[in-house]
Amino acid sequence: MRLMLAPMEGVIDHTMRELLTSLGGVDRCVTEFVRVSGQLLPARVFKRYCPELQRGGTTLGGVPVYLQLLGGEPTVMADNAARAAELGAPGIDINFGCPAKTVNRSDGGAVILREPERVYAIAAAVRAAVPATTPVTVKTRLGYEDQQRFLDIARAVEAAGASELTIHARTKRHGYRPPAYWEEIARAREVVALPLIANGEIWNPQDALRCLQVTGCRDLMLGRGVLCRPDLPRLVKASLAGAQPAPLSWAGLLPLVLRFYELNLDRYEARYAPNPLKQWLVYLRGYYLDAAPLFERVKRLRDPEQVLQVLRETCAAGAAARSLPMTA
Ligand SMILES: Cc1cc2nc3c(=O)[nH]c(=O)nc-3n(C[C@H](O)[C@H](O)[C@H](O)COP(=O)(O)O)c2cc1C
Figure 1 (cartoon, protein in one colour):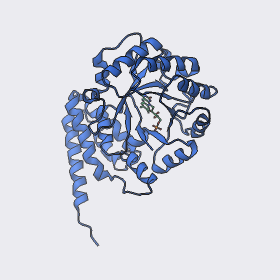
Figure 2 (cartoon, rainbow, N blue to C red):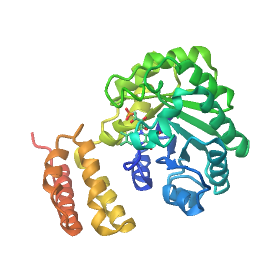
Figure 3 (cartoon, protein in one colour):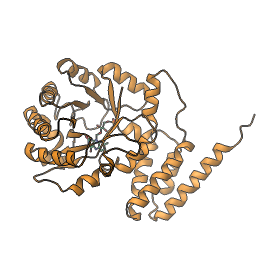
């Protein structure tokens, strides 16, 4: 089975991809969506979203990063897909899942799901525009207001020649509210032969196993679950193989959190570096109780150096705790 790291706009950028894939278990990443509206974007835009293009489109550890496009105009989507492929993107993913009002109002994301014919037209145009060796994948929800046309959407994606379809098992109306309707993915498997990747509400290895059983899929995409538990992909694969490795402890994770912050300090203007860290700590609080006090300590800090100081102290305390001899 393969595990894909979900695209998450404003959260999973190349720094986060680098960190999360370094823990193993991820077979593919997808960039945040690149908004395509009316024109051919310059190469620098693709490189900004996907700095991995400078390395053949893979992370440092060699995991391919597909470039995600979002837009409603087949010709313009096709032109931009061709440019991304020329720049070395190992695959193109089309976003038909974004629920954001601003995006949907300007004819992009989940709103296209109202018309499976347009799903077909966009995916077919993109497929025709890139070399046959470049996979074109599609990411959808079950529908916009409801899932009445879900099976038509799946058929349209297959007919357009896409190689895989990732299904976030909720409609746009469901937003991100649990549950995810995995059983709908099983229905799609009955009408299309293209590989389906199941996505939504997988927070631990047990969820992953249940999702595989319910959907009958071989592959999964994991999003927020990996931000809460960065070793989730490795744990899922281990569970499937019948092993039960020790989960990553908070003390074990801290050096990675520090590294993430240092990379952000290097790559972005220093005053912006605390924001992605704070955002990640909010996710980490969902699994690691110790992330909450750390978040409380940094949440009001603006000075990047002060944040660094707190992180270093926390990391050193974590390392000291790990090296304490076991007492009887
Ligand atoms: C903050 C945020 C940003 C997201 N950005 C994208 C995106 O750029 N492209 C996309 O296809 N999906 C995006 N998604 C949806 C996720 O890829 C995924 O489908 C969704 O979170 C459900 O999976 P999960 O329950 O494993 O998180 C985003 C979700 C969140 C919460």
